[in-house]
Length: 321
Ligand SMILES: [Mg+2]
Image (tube, rainbow, N blue to C red; front, side, top):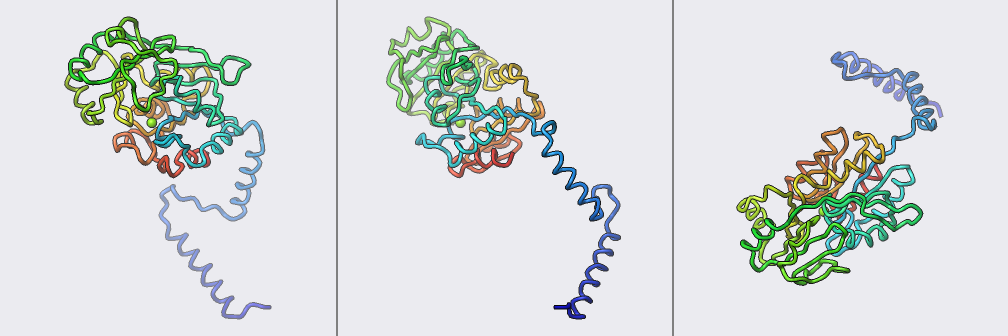
């Protein structure tokens, strides 16, 4: 069917309007209008480049926090995360975990995520594990930071006489004073409070059912924990690490070892114990993404926010790579 004269007329009008718009655009240098033939060439060029192996996407170091990032509070998985991790690995990226958990509480999560990364950062950076060659889920303690916990334990005991304590020793053994709900105590040994300070430790964990997140932050300010690093966990516990140690210090060791450029780092987390690694990633040209349900100050520290852990925030970020 041939076009009606009226249709032709409208088409001509449109062309004229376009020409006017183009003329009216300011020459700011920010807007480039490519002629159709040039645009087609550009598209062809892009298509050719994607097919060339030497311009393939650079290998990234993708770092995921566990609780509140890949796992919900009931330990179920964030929607889509296993698939998205598998796809990121298939694309050649190194996907790893950086968590406040001890190795004992991390190992099982790797299995659930179907992940066997070369390195795992545990205990908020105080412990870095390395996969032992040949065995997918056998890891050794590759790098361990310790501190003398006696002064910290004395101060905390003074202010929180009812609290429950756990320390992690350099070899991974853990000592605790009383049963800690929600804590995996496999291979942990119950001891009197006085024994907690007998050796140097990687971390001290304090749980006091009466304290909430705000109380812990107040307490830390009050007693001045200057000689150590600390983080408040999402179900309100106080986690104390050696001075200057956080997830980022462990991750920098791993990044260097893997030879991945700082600008190819992507970290995702939800909590205050992720702020150090957010800053580390961003300061060196990488990306930091916060989960939507995280505290405002944590989201502010990241450059970007994804959807919440319930809504599959990690999968959304990985799918968009
Ligand atoms: Mg978390």
